[in-house]
Amino acid sequence: MKALAKRMMSRTAPTAASLPANILATPLVIPRDRHSISRKQIPEHALKVLYRLHNEGFDAYLVGGCVRDMLLGITPKDFDVATNAKPEQVRNLFRNCRLVGRRFRLAHIVFGRDVIEVATFRGHHTDEEDEHHDDKKSKRNDHGMLVRDNVYGAIEEDAQRRDFTVNALYYNIADFSIVDFAHGVRDIEAGVLRMIGDPIARYREDPVRMLRAVRFATKLNMRLDDSVSKPLKECAPLLQNIPPARLFDEVLKLFAAGKGVANFDMLSDYGLFQQLFPVLKPYLNAPEQPPYQMIRKTFADTDVRIRNDQRITPAYLFAALLWWPLQARMEQLQQEGGFSPIDAMNLAAADVIGRQVQRIAIPKRFTIPAREIWQLQQRMERAKGKRLQSILGHPRCRAAFDFLLLRAATAPAAERIQLQQQAEYWNKLQPQMIPSLDNDAEADSDSPPPQGAQPPRADGEQKRRGRRGGRRRRKPSVAGE
Ligand code: ATP
Ligand code: MG
Image (cartoon, rainbow, N blue to C red):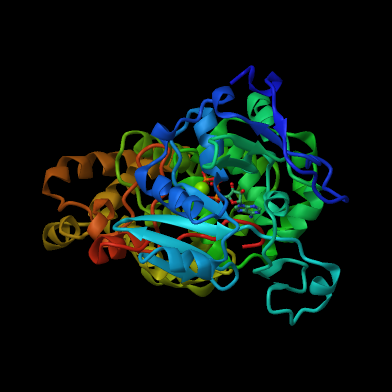
């Protein structure tokens, strides 16, 4: 790898003028004998798709994260293909193809449980297109964000639309070379994430790129170029324009894929975490206090579970993150409204979750069990006799017990002893607890990823995929999604 950038590279045809700062006028072509990617690393289905396109006379490349990861020696999560064939042409070549996406039309080639995503090279938006919001192919919203993007183009343009230089590498099936449009290979070697084009403009176009910058930095162990990191604080509020459903997906990639603590630390330093969880903002400036300790320990414990191949559930994660805002609201309701602890918890839960889902659309199948975990905390405090049995038989009992341990470990000094005694009491009852639904893929279909793999499909896709023996939802690959 080290010597890669220094090695000889041939050139392809020049591209148009007015290129983004770090896009090369002529891309570097790194021949097969000068890079480390071998076809042995590429799954059979991806090769099949690449060869079929190639044999039919189309250009076919692996692109994006898979090329980057293979160069870094990481096993890619998925293999994406880019081609000059239009989606309809791709469909005509594969019986097992379906076209998906409105904002981004993509072809999915389905091999049982495996799906290879094939995207047609995306082109530039002309100024007229940008001005005419009713354009059929591309569309921006009032914040300048791309909400539809079906303008096709040449590979050079496709490369310019990608986010980071390390994500704009193409593996060409025609000659097994790597085509590098923006010194991505050099940046991989240097361990630095650089944006293609002006970072501020690219954040405006799609603010999720800020979250991606942090995620790639921690996942790939790279540093952010100054130009990428400097505008983050100021641009962070742009995240308010992102649909909460998309942010939910991003939050899982950030916190349920093994790098939770690192992402939390970096996101809060840049003021991005505060945008995702505004209700936690008051706690972030007091790292020695129990709320902060509980948030960070939640991420740390989740990372450990993922490392150990144990299942995790977003329900537990959100229950833990929102516990202290819940306590604050409960206290207020009890003091000002005279509510009982049980009523106060119900009202506060609705209130805190209601505020959080305005930013991150946590599906009900996770908020409901999160509330059950909270309610069980109250019930575990004073359970005896028959009630004890009903708690032990509760599908969330195990998760609630883990939660109690988390609280005991991070509680304010005044409550710590009492919580530890409670935890000790329930610890003895552990053998009587029924297996937790939270740890059951059947329940939430959010089994944890093996290391380096995708975060749990918190939208229930895994279960559906399993049953139908097929489809998985894929996000579109480039820009403004
Ligand atoms: P990983 O799959 O490990 O999260 P990835 O780089 O493959 O990383 P994907 O979200 O799968 O990320 O996207 C595939 C490729 O599509 C990226 O490598 C990048 O080239 C492009 N891409 C994805 N999202 C964006 C975006 N918001 N803006 C610009 N390009 C993007
Ligand atoms: Mg990917």
